[in-house]
Length: 356
Ligand SMILES: NC(=O)c1ccc[n+]([C@@H]2O[C@H](COP(=O)([O-])OP(=O)(O)OC[C@H]3O[C@@H](n4cnc5c(N)ncnc54)[C@H](O)[C@@H]3O)[C@@H](O)[C@H]2O)c1
Image 1 (cartoon, rainbow, N blue to C red):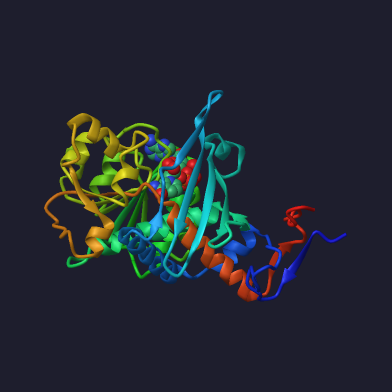
Image 2 (cartoon, rainbow, N blue to C red):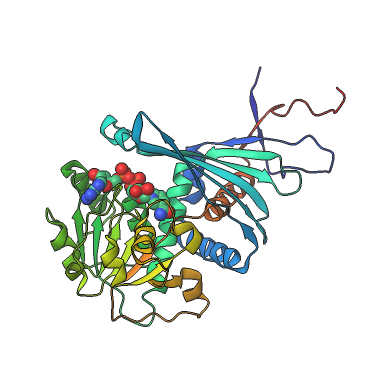
């Protein structure tokens, strides 16, 4: 008995009344659909932020499942709904088990479920960790672009924490036209630093790569600093390390002590989302009792409502929005459908007649 069939290019519901279909998309297919599409995905993420800012999306708070006997781990549910042309609902269910890395598999694993706009039926379940890393890196590249407009682009980048997310961010920066004279790396793990250096060399980067044992040196020698650690609480607290006013992509959200944010211009992706779950901006709010330290959102910058000056460090802290996962996931679904390789699970929905 076959368990799946390949649907050439038909949409999920060809006619009203048709049995809903359900397709599974593997990581291999997700990767193939996204490869080399950095510019297109950054544009998609920009459009999704604009849609979210216009109110044509629903993005409730993420739910964090914590596991008592695994205190460093969590599984997060990110439900969302998008209007616009995407018109899809869905859920990303993403695990973070940092100890996986020592066991030789990535920290994060995920599935993304897409639900049909009209019927609510789930129509696809796809490998989600690549989509998650892709939308995170695309959002970082988008922010780096918008937050440096009108002044020279940084040419010295420093990666603080060099795992999978740092690799995707580098790929997205390189794939959207950034070039660097110098790349600095800092990681608690010498193996991670060596692995990232190897990735950079394989990707064709031939300028200077410096592995810094010392965090201060990495920050002071970088005009663009990317935090992608798994730190649960702040471990960088000296504001003087940022005296040269770098752009900081604070992707891992919990590295910077509130004092550093209070001396910086702070941009987030979504205020309500970001001021939760003991992120550094959340700690700054708890310390000051207000949100005056926030300049605004990336959408404010893109809409021309917020001008950026270079006289302070500039920190972008993106909580990561489910709508971005949906946008990238729907893009992948459409690509796989178009390629004629959509694996539909036969008879996935079985109880389709109300009275049997
Ligand atoms: N904001 C978002 O939208 C978003 C999305 C996805 C991932 N993330 C975050 O990105 C981070 C990185 O994810 P990943 O998949 O690359 O993880 P990873 O485990 O592959 O890599 C993390 C690296 O950070 C290093 N590290 C940990 N603590 C450090 C410290 N204090 N100083 C220096 N190095 C340190 C580790 O040794 C490891 O090499 C995670 O915190 C994750 O939650 C954020």
